[in-house]
Amino acid sequence: MKKWYEELFENYAIKYDKESFTQGTIGECDFLEKEIEYNKEVKILDIGCGTGRHSIELAKRGYNVVGVDLSESMLQRAKEKAAKKKLQILFEKQDARKLTYLNQFDLVIILCEGGFSLMESDEMNFQILQNAANALKPKGKLIFTALNALFPLFHSVKEFLNGEAKEGNAIYDNHSFDLMIFRDSNIISFEDDFGNKKELQCNERYYVPSEITWQLKTLNFQTIEIFGAKLGAFSRTDKLSTEDYEMLVIAEKYYQQ
Image (cartoon, rainbow, N blue to C red; front, side):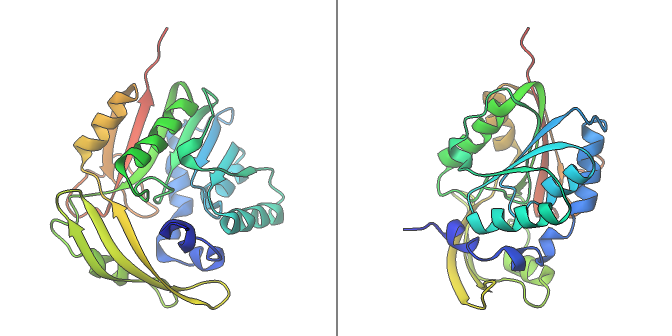
């Protein structure tokens, strides 16, 4: 039986690209470029690349990118978009919990809940971070976004998500945030690319900064910094607060001589 996140991203690629939360690609890639000091020698792994929006934009700017995702239809859309722009990007169907890359990349990105936080257990989410860490070269950088558990303590997640949505976007309902495990259970209603109406029971894990820091320290990251994540406007000056739905995490791998 398919998990909700597998069903959600099945035949949802075109509609996904129209979602309000996917519209910040240019600004987000501007930030990533700055973080790697515009070094075109940097090799990038995009985990949970979806329709390839970050991979494609970075490749367009001259970077070597590999994109992995669990969804065939999302990857197909990514390949079509890359081919149209005549870009050479390796897109592969892979499970982020089972990646086998070792010391191959200078930068790993997991943006817009690219697998991390969608998994059904904390152990599975941790596996994704572990595989990202393994994929990095010494002194490599991991940049990812995570759902901020401070946000639902002060705001309605339903109001926030539906308030951001445009016509034709997915609608979220029946939210239930569990304070014991920082998980939000909700029902998402949407229409896929073929016009089929679907309703799925979803469950996502929100994190507090101290949890993220502890997990990354366990994985031998030396420098760990956490900021607020504003759509299309990632910035090191954006101090994380209860107003941020997502947090932006920047971690540098420990260099062992």
